[in-house]
Image 1 (cartoon, rainbow, N blue to C red):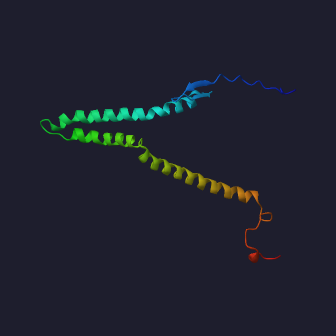
Image 2 (tube, rainbow, N blue to C red):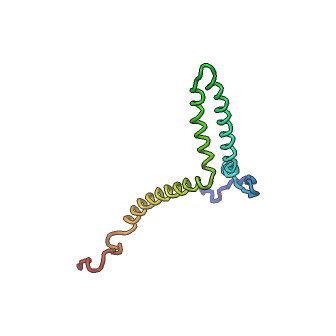
Image 3 (cartoon, helix red, strand yellow):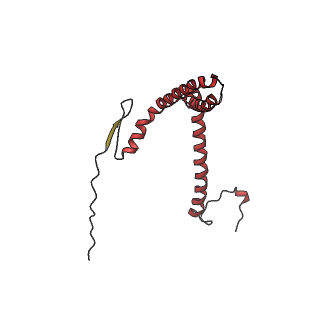
Length: 145
């Protein structure tokens, strides 16, 4: 019984096209891979909106804090959220975001480097046998057979 030599390949659908802020157009077959870079520039806008809402909630808690009887728990509950939102906004300032970027690059480089070192030592030992591996010892320390 002969085997079929030609296998029918399904037709590839038309790629999705999306225009990013700034006028750049991207095309890709998977919509989720295209939409992520399109929405990334909107993150600072959402951070600003979150901070404004947190400030509004803290201002709304002031009358409860001062009212009879005074209860500081309302404002004490909203201050950690406000601090978190302001911290997210501070990362938008280039002088403060650059150290975070450098630390991220160093962390990624060191984790990649340590992974590469472990992989390279494994491949070196299997790639070279003891008899064919070049000697790295200085000529004076090599022994003659």
